[in-house]
Image 1 (tube, rainbow, N blue to C red):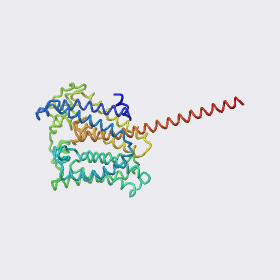
Image 2: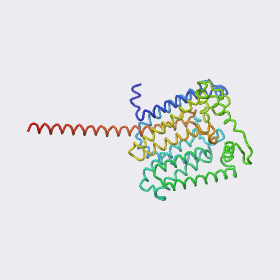
Image 3: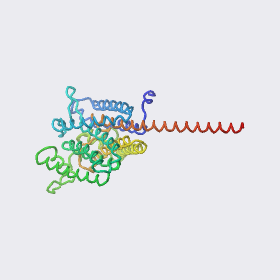
Image 4: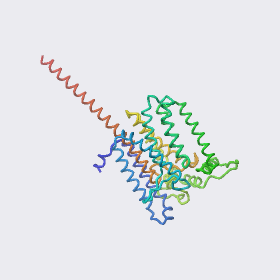
Length: 406
């Protein structure tokens, strides 16, 4: 164990948060997949063991990535961004349809699926951090500064939106915050927001008119959230929202206890999109608040890292990746308690998943890489300062001895 700990560096609080979320997710996934395992004629612990294998592999990725100097990701980001474009195009036209959405690419032979949007999110923030750091001297200029950093955002969000609008909106909102932190003029950010709203309206209209994408699904989700259809007639909450509310009501303050959820047998996707409802049912409002606290603590530690990092690329990369992970978590939890329409976003490191856990692990690894090298630079600076202080004291003693001898 000590040998393993020697290879683990970086912010210990972030490491603790990753482990706590992973372990908590493992417990809830085991409880939430009992019915699914029965339907598929699997062992009750089948999905838990699968989740455990993904978590172990994910932790291995974090250890591997955090040992890489984060500055190297600047060059890698260009290749990843260029690769994400054909992957998203392929997904749009030839992707596998799972849960009424063409968001997955199936790898031949091994038949493993992964979401290309997960890869594109990571690539976009890495590439955007690079551009913002390079363009700081001209970032206020619309043509020389704003347009170059805006273009990759429009490209990636535009390719994701037809089949995964919630992820595209999440990316767009996070990029606006990153632009604000990166000293982009507020009027340019407001222009981007206006273009985004117009683009969404046009996309939904075109999607419904030509039966392309998921326009009808988006409109239905908005109507379900409003509780009224297009003609103003009241509607009941969707089945999954009703079951989520029942799970939350059953949980109370302290919960029914681990493994004692009842709504897991009725709630659709209790192990992914609506896993937070199972968390509250089994661990109560206290357990739900603990999850919120962990994500907010992670964001706070990354903001501190942003302020400590001496280089713009690392600072922008840390805050960009952390904001998108925390925003995704907050949106997932907001959907569960019916504060926003159903989106289909998972709870990072808690929901059962494949590619989402792996790419989230890479994001954590990059953040810890930044933390590690910031700690090392500060340690070197302190060592140099101590060395200079000792040298100064020694010189003072030598001078005093010479004066005393004279």
